[in-house]
Picture 1: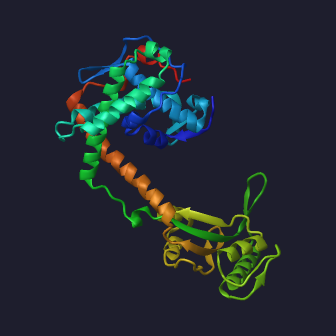
Picture 2 (picture 1 turned 90 degrees about the horizontal axis):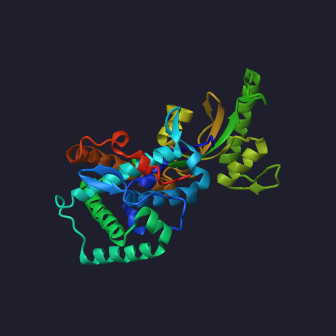
Amino acid sequence: MMKFKINKKYIAAVLTLIFCLSTLSCGRNEAMKASPEDTVFTFAGENISLGEVYLYANTVKEDYEATYGKDVWNIDVSVAKDSSVNMEDVTRKDIIEDIIHVKLLALKANEYKCALTEEEAGKVASQTDAFYSMLTDEQIRTMDLSYDMIQSVMQENAIAKKVYDLIISDAGIEVSDEDARETTFYDLYFECYTVASSGDVTKLSEDEREAQYERALQAYNTLINPIESSYNDGTSDSNPNSTNIEGLAEYYGLHNSSYYTMTPSEIEGIYGKDIMTSLYNLDDGSYSLVTESEYGYHIFYMKALTDREATDKRKNELIVSKRRQYIESHYSEWQKEADPKFSYEDSVDFDVYDSIIFN
């Protein structure tokens, strides 16, 4: 079994709102076999067939294998600190939970006054035509996949998406630049310790530490004085900028110097609160003074206090996370109303479900 791990957050991102099922590709996967006319589980009085579960499972299977390869089902998934489960096991459970979420959203359609327009219904019909035409005879036979069943699932997903969009829109979930901020800076780092090949760490002596400090001061003076300076790599630069600081890192042999993109909390966790505060007092394109930490001396170049691309990406991730948390609180309450006795462990017929082969 593979020993590396995938964080469960990725799985949640793929599975959340799988009512994008209306765009799934069935492929021509012959690995998933099952007997027809079987029920995987019953929820709120509705029998959920093996064929319906297959539609969801096949979508997830193709997505994961495209991302991680066909051996993905032997990977361990990190679900908590020092805790992991097999990828197939956690995915099977999440698929059932996600089907239930779609059912719960669809059950709320009348309450939220959601119905498919004629145009939306026509789009679902077209998507059903395209999807059904891609199925093999083997898939249709073993999974008992009828055209009407596939269209019904797609219609239900389309309705669920409309309900979801309305709920999320009403929630007004937003994330500010400040909350999502990612900062990009360069750390010209004069370390004050050595690491042996055995991994043992040895702090520098006071004299050696003082020598590192003098080197850091020299580098700082080079950065802030707009005079032409040459490095042992043959480059020269008359302006204090990011190229200059990278050249200095090479000149002084500072192999642990690099650009970093971090959130304020990440910076504080690595460098401490004082350095984090001083960094956020810098302007874009400016340098810090020689700054001491428990690990050595640093000169920071502030490339972007708010890295636009990284901040926008994190903002989107935070919005997705907040939306997931918000809607999941609804799912919990709705499930108590719709089918309070349902549980994955007790309500799923695993003899039937295991007929869908992932590995």
